[in-house]
Length: 133
Figure 1 (cartoon, rainbow, N blue to C red):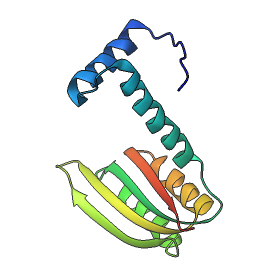
Figure 2: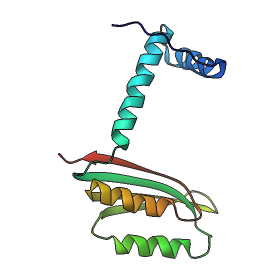
Figure 3: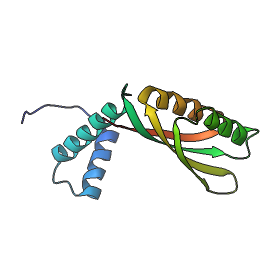
Figure 4: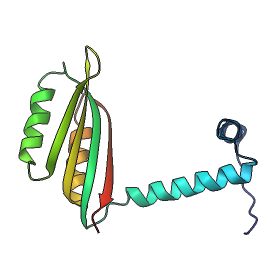
């Protein structure tokens, strides 16, 4: 192993110390190593591969927003070749959660997800891609 020096502001260091307490790390180095591994994995996963992928698009939206449900349904039908299955859950009076299981080229799935999650009144959205290869 190599020793490196990292400068962290107090707020970030407090967050690392809290992580240590809640997850039982013996020292800051162990916590920072795990955070670094996790961050590198996330960056790698965010790089959209140009290969066939499976994907899960999870998003929450305001079902009362004017025409949003209709537009999301139309969008899914327009890309029916990418969608394997969907799950629709009523969270509360105003919000719905949908999970769309997808299959296709990574870039196509990312484009589809971006179009859905950037729609007005879609509050949260995340795509998880898993390369088939």
